[in-house]
Image (cartoon, rainbow, N blue to C red; front, side, top):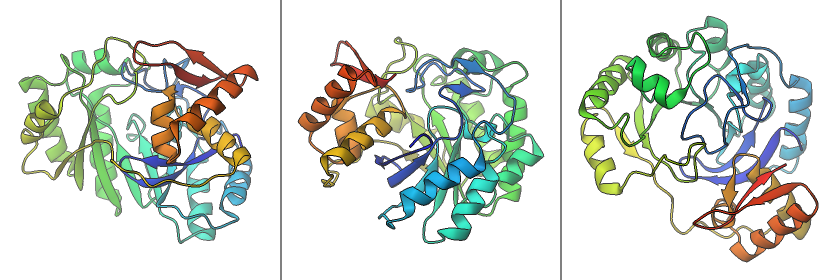
Length: 309
């Protein structure tokens, strides 16, 4: 399927069915840490990049067997709120499949637009991002499209919090040397206090980012950073150990590996962990996909990476 991928194992959300409703790497930001790679279409233009009818048809196929899921997540390889039909698709899920929770992951850049905010209010969970407050650090980390600035982003999130009744968790991605300084952390804390999310999620590099110089942050420093955000409810995001094994047929596993790769360039070990399967099986499938021209292998210092073609 073109717009539905997984289920995959999410560090925060559990077993998640992914919904990708914009073209690959179409985004309003070009973040240095993005695990999906460099943004190839930088825009703030909101329109129907994928039709609601097409996406909903794929969702109906994916949910026909009533799979066990913790959540259905709008994420993928670009900014989902750029699609003007996101509200229609969310409403389709909530109406026809009320047993499933819906989450939206967003970079927050369009939350100052009333119609965009309204389109996601029926989601059960929203995970907006805010990685910097100062113009200098924001530009360095986010490389935004023209017209995107941290002030409007924060004001949009304040409005979203006032209007939204579901669970809202503010994600802050720590990039060493940029937003881990006391000055920037204080600005982020003050902004978070104004936004009043249910939780603040501190995240860090887990897979290679779009810029090779971005490095992960150690556990000790992440815990120190978390102290800046008290009295807010803070959670440091980390991998879940011991994911359960999920049995798949050969053809089904092949499709799920390809779907998992669509969410970002990754290594076989990470894909295996997310899907709950053996690494050797993922390597075999990735090599087969490479030979078929559906994926390519990228040599890397810590092991080969794979991405879809």
